[in-house]
Image 1 (cartoon, rainbow, N blue to C red):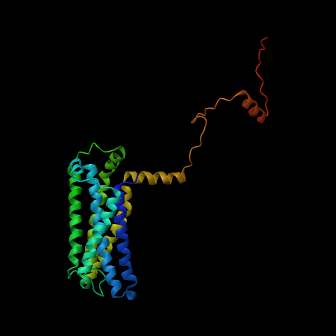
Image 2: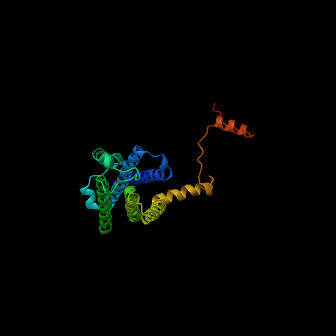
Image 3: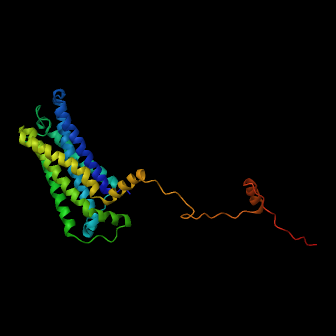
Length: 276
């Protein structure tokens, strides 16, 4: 079953991957980037980092709905379709309004990220910090609450049990994400080597934790990966008569003769008594 929180995880990691691809573009092809491309990159970096933190918040909302009974009654259940639409639309609207209002103040030719001394920095910083702070608060609620909703189905209850470990991965990834964003924006704006070093270290840790923690803390994902790997290593058991009993259908006398002739044998016709 494809769970709703998995949609939030995939979208969050898509935002992170896309943002770092743009950052890589600014470092490897800096001579080919003109002012218009630099502005577009800054706007998309704004969008992807806000989107990543917002999807992190939606993921922990799914965790609270499965782990906290009163939260499930307070917040309406979110479908995968609504989560997908809201997760992309809200950061898109925010970034679009910011880009329209502060078009000329977004960035500089030497800095293809947000300019921390200009107004567009705040529409990026406030949502990222706000989503991360609310994310930590909701995670803390899941640790304090011990009552799992009784109205969950069997698959939802099994998923709620796995949230006991996946929430740790969510906290660590959210922490590294906001640190990477802060060090990256500051390094691009100030040009200091210590901030570039901190941005590099936090980015490496973020990539490693996304890959390892998403698998190691998720029991269902780990079981599926292990089962798929074993399919290639261990051959499937052959069907034997000892394990699977075959029930032969009853055949009439004519079909028995045909089968016996095929096998090279003849079947004696049963004696019939003639009644005069």
